[in-house]
Amino acid sequence: MASKDNSFISLQGVAKHFGSLRAVEDVTFDIKRGEFFSLLGPSGCGKTTLLRMLAGFEVPSSGEIYIDGQPMSAVPPNARPTNMVFQSYAIFPHLTVAQNIAYGLRKKGLSKAELADTVEQALQRIRLGGYGQRLAHQLSGGQRQRVALARALVCRPKVLLLDEPLAALDKKLREEMQIELRQLQRSVGITFVFVTHDQEEALALSDRIAVMSKGRTLQVDSAARLYEAPSCREVAGFIGSMNFFDGTVTDVDGDIATVDAGSAGALRVPVNGHATRRGAKATVAVRPEKMEIAWQPPQGVTNSVAGRVTAEAYFGDRSHYHVEVSGLPHHIAVALQNSQRSLDTTEARGRRVWLTWPVESSVLLPQAGG
Amino acid sequence: MRRRSIGWLELYGLLFIALLYGPMLLLPLFSFNDSLYIAFPFKGFTVKWYEAMVQDSALLAALRNSLSVAIPVSIVSTAFGLLTAKALTRFRLPGRRAIVGLIMVPLVIPFIILGIALLTTLRKTFDVPLSLWTVAAGHILICLPFSVMVLISRLEGFDRSLEEASLDLGESAWSTFWRITFPIVLPGVVSSLLMCFTASFDEFLIAFFLSGDGATLPVFIWSQLRFPQKLPNVLALGSCILVLSFLLIAIAEKLRRGGIPTEKHSGF
Ligand SMILES: Nc1ncnc2c1ncn2[C@@H]1O[C@H](COP(=O)(O)OP(=O)(O)OP(=O)(O)O)[C@@H](O)[C@H]1O
Ligand SMILES: [Mg+2]
Image (cartoon, rainbow over all chains, first blue to last red; front, side, top):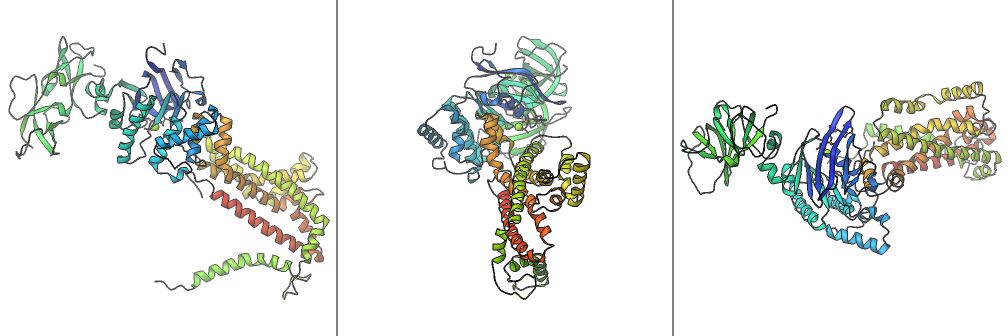
């Protein structure tokens, strides 16, 4: 069961409790071979704990982890086919860069020349040729990060675990390293499990992402699906920004449901596989950039919500508006592309507008207890 | 621009240091004086007291006793100290502060009280004969706090993930200790060895109460003070001990502070 098709790592009902604290609860998902997989979630949601269970530093309180078909619970960290890049990098301070990189190779039975060769190649690959004799404190943060990466990769692990490896770097360096990391992963073909709390980083790098909250996984999916088809309100709100209209399902007609969203009126939304029925509570979610603003009452459109502009901001390529809809607890955010040149300087604030969007641009989210 | 001049505060400081260390410097000074009596003016330069010292067989026996106590004491105290410090820094022990306090207690109890207490316990309660063994046991008690203190400060600056990284790279717990943990705490270990050695070597009160026939060096020196003609010998010996202790402590301090720079360094 563990190694069906191309599932390479399999977590089955994994939980970790520290006393009464449930750091990880009933986590089940598979990671494919050669995948760049990210664990994404807010601080304290259990990402590091999950990663440390994969590395073998924590033993699951219940459940089992399989790597390449083998159950891992009885396997100590030094016998696992995983290597880890620590958030603090954990470069050994008393060893040189070259000795750090060679550290994991001692038991591989390489000759002195082969060892020196491997280390030299690794140094070249991380563009630190000539830095072999330096100590950790003589390196910059980005260089240390690369040494940690090289030290793990020369061991040729089946899985590389990375715990927020870019968090300590400044923005520019972080963006450079993101691109490098992605290229590196493609070229070595090793499965990466990458922890981050930065959603943009996760979206940009990953083949698939597990969104976590309070020790549980909310959704495991590709970046595009997390953005375009979130499975619940938490995921929708965590990834990008989202407008929500709460209401009750009044009709289900094939693939399209109609939701009575109170003062926002009746909204039509694709069901998209969610189990729903008449009378169920549901939320219609629409991204700001998927909405259009009409300055006159629109004719013949399905979804249209009337409101008043309370704030606008001009960014050159796009403009953002806040629209107040009477009866809704929060304003609606709209982002418009300024795709046509216009010097129309009419103030939008205070104007009455109608928000419209195509049916297939909205998402139906089941409501808890609905 | 400030004029460099010696103000009242500097004067006070100089006086303070002179009074603190001046008397100690008299010791080596008079050890080269060609006279039985410690009194100005100097009579002349001589090294005969040093010659007499190295020919004094009782003195050499006492030196041997001291070394055979101080060396094992420093090793045992440091070994215990390392285990204790590792446990205290590595695990979230309940009552950690209480444990540290308990270990430090011998430092604040007057050694004379400690000496008498140990003597009565050993003799009256357990009827153990006094010997260098009992002296060593007493010294371990007072050396352990030094050792724990030095090693805790070393281990606290130690990033736990270094050991995990070593395990992760395929090493066993045992080889991780020898390849990672030990080299990083080594300066602390050496510093602890030197401090414990000095503490035991110089210690008088506990050695005085707990030694049998075999006197350690400080006890021997004290016994010699009854004979005025032996006093210059003692001065020569004292000078040697002074210089040696100073060197050892200086080395120990340098090692404790310096060594490998760890990322999370916590010196105090
Ligand atoms: N060894 C431990 N003992 C007790 N509680 C722990 C331990 N390790 C982690 N926790 C708790 O488990 C929860 C999850 O911690 P974890 O480090 O996995 O979070 P995280 O998602 O990595 O957060 P961050 O983004 O801040 O690193 C936290 O509430 C944390 O306090
Ligand atoms: Mg973490």
